[in-house]
Image (cartoon, rainbow over all chains, first blue to last red; front, side, top):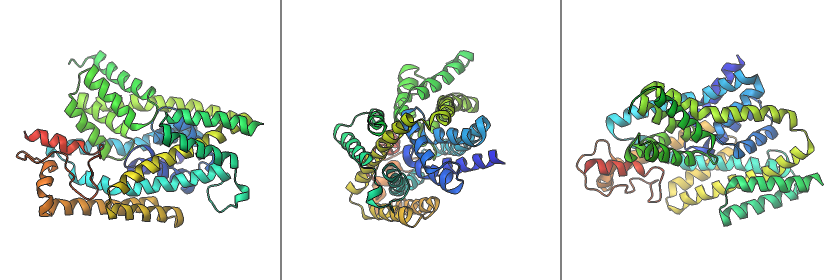
Length: 186
Length: 233
């Protein structure tokens, strides 16, 4: 039963994450943290962090991680299979349509229509991630006194570095981690 | 090319290596696939590869997975697609499985917590950076509708907890409406031809903006009309 639920939840993630990359983020958060409570918000943050410094799409990384945690290796297989099933079906249908009709105009119209919403959803997800990094919770309703000013400084420094010098994001995150060890361990 | 055991092994191996050593998400791996399958192995020609990438981007799910399915299917049918999926999924699957066991054992060690806390501020910054770039691209086009959709979606998701899938469905409908309207208005006709289905006879500028969402720097969806235009010549 659990395996089926894992499969289905990640099927939904795979089915609705249009646009690649971070587009899956809000959907994973919705399915894994809010609908099913498989991960706490802190654990979700951790898998997101791990995802950033390991190869592979975030949706595959998250499905494997959640699967292992909830039901071991079989869980990981079920969740990952769920995540890629919609891709397999839809990609092959589009390929056939494309080779037959040489055009994906309507499909691309839909994608373009979705893009602003996807940006907005990633932004909403990003806001809760920022809140978690700064307050240790996923909402901004906490007072300024609960704010972790070291994390705020680190966030601003990282964002500035990323916008200004365009380095590899992995380096920025690893740098932030090392500074974190120094700041929080002392 | 001969489809012997070596070919199938090479297909799987290519997908596996590309996936294992690609950090930085979908678009990086797509570029590397082009390098390997088009330039090195010469299994697919450049134009067709662009088409496969465009199809991969039009479908939901990770772009890397979608494109690898298409490459496998194109080269060796369903068994090929199966091999490339396996090759692409296995590296992150193995890596994350191993890491998640370590994670559960080590996550409560203070130094590891400190490392994660620091990295989380970094992750938040990376996402903020991505959002700023993506939103700027949409705002720069100076079209009202996408900006409104973006603002309302953000408010609905952040403050009203509206279900994400509902937001996606509604904005998808806007996309259909906009592309249908662009397709029927006389002004858009000449342009519409360039990327319409089965275009044989157009001399229209390839890749010209066809609807409210389109724009010149729109690299990820500009490939299809371009290919269509070349088909016709």
